[in-house]
Length: 76
Image 1 (spheres, rainbow, N blue to C red):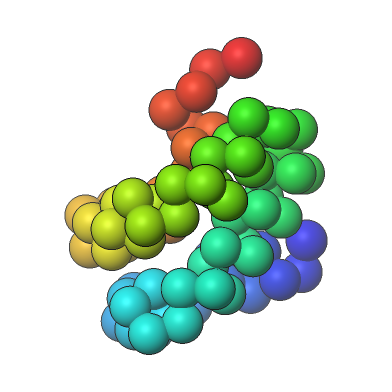
Image 2: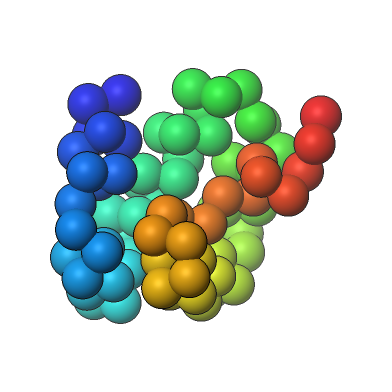
């Protein structure tokens, strides 16, 4: 959980640069966050639809200063 808090605490420009150049770090972030929230379907979507999530990450960071999460779209 410390990794998620660390990434969430970064400034917006750092989040954008990480999302563009190191998307694997954000994939790990998303999987950890979805696992702690108990969103199994979201983890599967993270793995198989990574390119879409990568684009959505950049958009969400610019607009809302947060990373995209399938768990926000899928309500269990």
